[in-house]
Amino acid sequence: MQSFEGLIGPPESKPMNIVGCGGNETGIGGILVSPNYPGPFPRTIDCVWLIRVQQNQHIYVRMVELQLFGSIAYCKDAQLAIYDGFESLEFDPKKPKQYCGDLTYYKNVEDKVLMSTSNRLLIRFKSDITSSHWSDQVSRNPITGFKLIWTAVEFKSSGECKAFTCTGSEFCMKPQKFGRNCEEYHSFCIDSSLQCNGVPNCSEQDFTDEDKCNVSLFVGASTGIGLTIIVIVICFCCCRRRNIETNTSRKDESVIGLNREESSLQSRHSELSEQSAYYAMRPIGDYYTPQTDAHVINCSVHGPRHVPEVLTQNHSSGPHQRVDLINKLNYIPTDV
Image 1 (cartoon, one colour):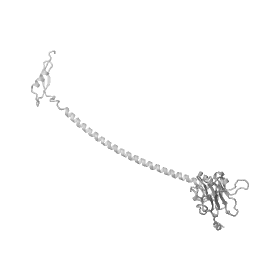
Image 2 (cartoon, rainbow, N blue to C red):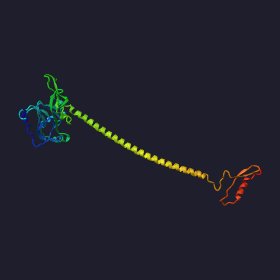
Image 3 (cartoon, rainbow, N blue to C red):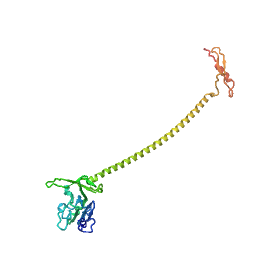
Image 4 (cartoon, rainbow, N blue to C red):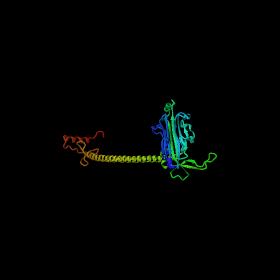
C-alpha cells in the first residue's frame, strides 16, 4: 500500500504553462503560494498541489494570507479548497475545507487551520473571474492570492519526541463521545531543522519554535555591542595615555627650558652684582677720599679738622685749587 500510494500523483493543473501552479510537495514542511504571489493571479486558472509526508505523520496547514476576489459570496469566481486523504476530484469527493473572499471572514482559529487525518492532502486553487471589478480590486490591495504554511507533524506524549516539541501545541487523541472535552492530548513533534527557520511551524498562536531564536539573537547582538564598547574604551584609554605622555614630555621640555632661562638669569644677575660692586669702588668724577691720608688743620675755635687732600695729579687744574678749598674749610663766621 505504501509503495502504491507513492505512485499516485496530483491531478493535472490547467493551464500547464503557469509557473508555480500545482505540483508535488514532500518533506518536513514548506510554504505554498498562489501563482505570481503577492501579485495578482491569472483570471482563469486551476492549480492542484499534492502534499505527501511519511506514513506515521500528519499534515498541519495554517492559512497566513488570503485575498482572492470579493467576499465569501464569490466562491464561484475564486476559491481555495483542501481535500483530506485520498479524495478524488472527479469521483464524488467529500466536501473540502473551502476558502473564499479574504481572511477577515474567518475569525476563529479552527477556521484558519487544518490537520489531516492521514499523510496526504490535495490543495486546489481555482479561479474563473469575468467581473469588471477585478482590476479595481487588484489596484486597491497590495496582496492578491493566498499563502499557507504546511508542516509534517507527529503526535507524541511528553518526553517521547526525539526532535522538537511544540510545547504550546496539542492534539486531542481521545475525544469524549459527548461534549467537547478530551481525555488525552499529545503534543506536536516536528523536525528539529524547522526550529529557528523564520517560519512558525507550530500551531496557531504557538511560536515556541521561533521564540528561542530571538533570545539567541539578543544575546549575540548584546555580545557584539559589548565587544564594540570594550574596543572603543581600549582605544580611548590608549589615546588618552598617549596624550598624557605627549603632554608630560612637553611639560618636561618646558621645565628644562625654564631651568635653563633661570640659570642664565642667575648668571647674568651675578655678573651684574660683580659689576655693581666694582663700579661702587670707583672714584666719583676725578676725586676720591682715602681713609688714612688726611691733614690736620688747627682751628682756634672749632678744633682740628680733617681736610682731605685733593689729588690734582693728571688733571688740568693748578695747585691754587687746593689752597682755595683749604681757605673755605678754615672760614670762621664773624657772628660765632
